[in-house]
Amino acid sequence: MITILTIFHVIVCIFLILVVLLQQGNAADWSGAFGGGGSQTVFGARGAGTLLGRATTAAAIIFMITSLALTILISQPGNSSVIRPGAKQENPAQPAPPAAAPTPAPQQQAPAPAPNPEKK
Image 1 (spheres, rainbow, N blue to C red):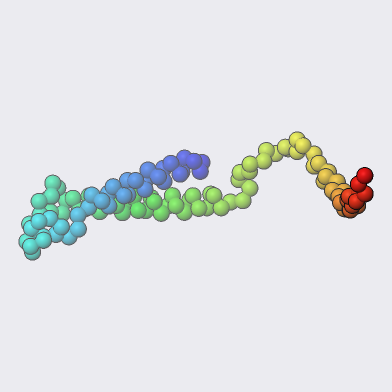
Image 2: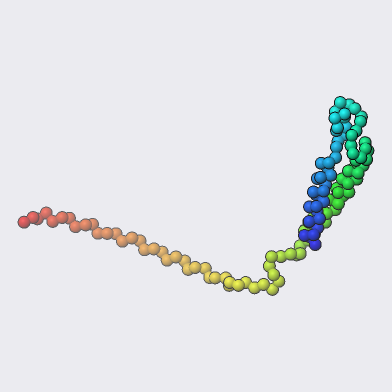
């Protein structure tokens, strides 16, 4: 259910972005830049604004509903888990390794014998 709703939500998001980008602001054409009131839109002066305005409103409402629905569905505890029910641990807990034996202190070496001064 969450996957289907997420896919639908992404489609609505893309549609909403496209509809908003297609809209023109008030007097956004060349004549509006110089104070003229003429409009050169395909649907007429008001037709395109009404159609895109309604599409934007509908997409925004659907976007908000899917956002709230996804938030509610995902926040419910216990819906999914990565652990299968009845799963058992395969490797039992291994005992801790024994403490390392203290290393003996290095033996002190006896000083080397002095060379024998007697020469024959």
